[in-house]
Image (cartoon, rainbow, N blue to C red; front, side, top):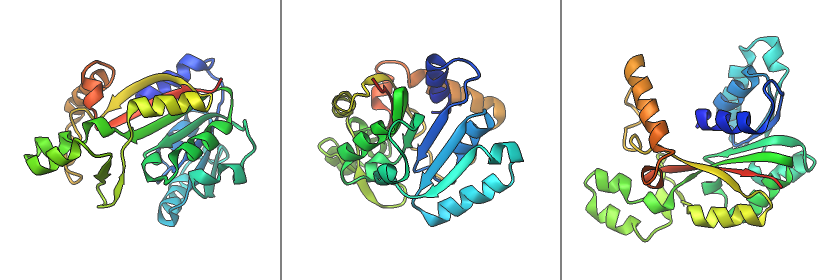
Length: 235
């Protein structure tokens, strides 16, 4: 996702422009810190106290110039209007968060309002059209059969959450004046890898990432990815 996001940023903004970025549901801050190191001003919004603490601890080890570019706030994506004025950001990230929102349309509309004209909204969601892939590849035929007709899945923490469809989100983005500009598949080949499996050696990891990146841009592979990365642009 980082490579895809960098591609979209580079395609929309002049080289060297320091962007105002909002990372909604930033987790432990990995993406926020990466973007701050690249020179951007980043605001991280996170509702989980433990993840927010981890992000603050990671930020504390960074040089002063990077720390000055990062602001961390406790809150969630439904509260953007409480914390920020409309049009406050050039880029809004909502990665792995929308599936937990009880009213995703309202949340999306709120995120879009945070964007300046021409701003980029980056979403990462679970792909409802590929829910049968994980149980099917694991030999769970009953689970695969049930997944064909479902928009709900169990995440890696055991929580049941919503998956989204490309067509539905395309319509939603058009409705909030941030129409779809580009989309990618994420985790085409690696969704079934267990959490406790370590990374391969550097050379093998680079081959893996290259294969995933190409599959995520190529039909029909990207349509069976576990996740979808959608980029909308504010009109």
